[in-house]
Length: 90
Image 1 (cartoon, rainbow, N blue to C red):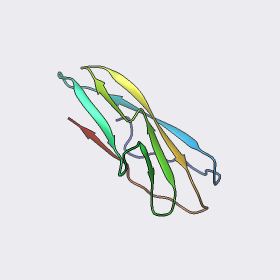
Image 2 (cartoon, one colour):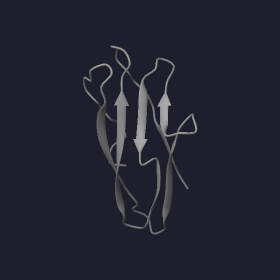
Image 3 (cartoon, rainbow, N blue to C red):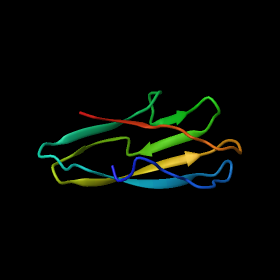
């Protein structure tokens, strides 16, 4: 991943902000990856109602291949948010 930390900065409540992360397969074998959501969809609403969405939420990268992932954040209230999103590779 191009970054382990995404800072959305200030985002107005109820609006969305999109951060882009680049993934690259630097190995010699294909890499299947996925976003690990707590629910069946790629949207996670934590206990305070903040929403994070990852698009695409899964994929397959061939050796040397890159892709760009959108991490979308929509705050539901005015406060500082610190949340960890989990990705898996196979």
